Image (tube, rainbow over the protein chains, first blue to last red):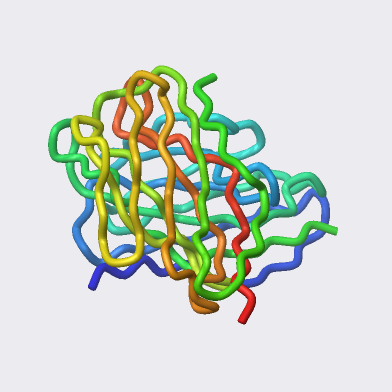
Length: 116
Length: 112
């Protein structure tokens, strides 16, 4: 079974703090994603990585950065956390590009971040 | 920005009834159109997906209907069970790149 592990399930941080959310996948997937989930807004893509050290901005990258130094690990960084970044963050991975893309994403269980 | 419009936002169905969730998409790649199911405290997981060159796909009690001309697709859950209570997301492939656009989600509650 594919496993995507998010190291922190619940975090509480103060405004202005730097926050690291870590994600590891064990299926040698090329693609990794960070989504943000908010009620009524669905899953919104923050950043996407299709290879080590490669990244693309998603729909809502402002206030976030990412790091992918190893194929299995994709980190989301909030340089200076703000209250409007209180949310559920979901990491996902998938294999293949183009015609091999089945649309199947494998998600972690999420990291619920509260910024006070 | 590409969108997928999903309705209803929430749905209450009696046990044994039919649950229907609808999605409409804009310009997209010709690829897979998946539905994801999310239980509380868990990440979403792929439930069922359809290629747009077919009009319907059925897996057990779950059926996707696809209308390419109308740019709409829907999920039907037959004989809905309390264990089906979850949040359901439709998704469409983006026009460019190996990424999906998700709908806003539907919270389904099946009453026993």
